[in-house]
Length: 198
Figure 1 (cartoon, helix red, strand yellow):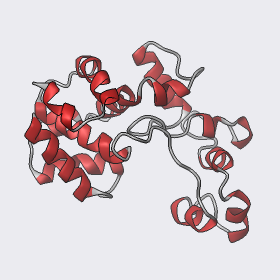
Figure 2 (cartoon, helix red, strand yellow; figure 1 turned 45 degrees about the horizontal axis):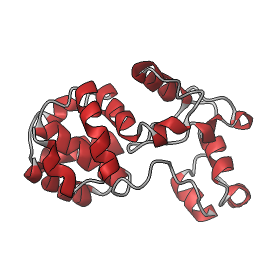
Figure 3 (tube, helix red, strand yellow; figure 1 turned 45 degrees about the vertical axis):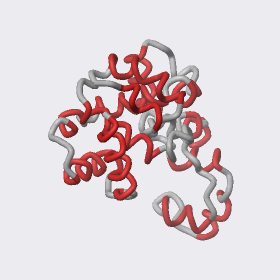
Figure 4 (cartoon, one colour; figure 1 turned 60 degrees about the vertical axis):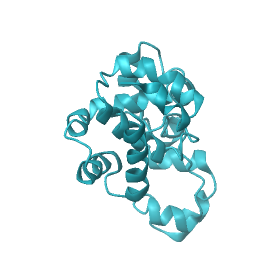
């Protein structure tokens, strides 16, 4: 696999992380790499975002997190306060403490495919050999690509990637990453770009 051919399509920061991530996560063929990169690129706004943006209006809160903001009054009280929002929506689940603990914000989505929740940060820390629970910023700054590969690995996505290059396979990977098909056209386009280069 000639990864240098990707340099025209990927930021230098991603190219620098690739060799180690490929080795560590058994990314053994071009299908795995193209599927992985296309999902990362889409989820992170072309590798620009490494932290979940929780700066929602009250309408946005009700639309995205309606379960946690059932009333206009409650949504209004939290709107445009990312830290408070994260602490509420991620409280008391995924290993996080209650809303007052601050864990929701500390362990909000980080990396190119957002690793979320204290339990997942702990599992990733154990795998990577560095304490990302004590220092959660590492996931966004040092390990944005590795944490995304960890997600692929943990969710057994490589076996889907190995099935091929068809639109149906991109769709199947997207469903596992996204839970639906948001941005499918962009993901397909990115996949075609990367697979052609490889």
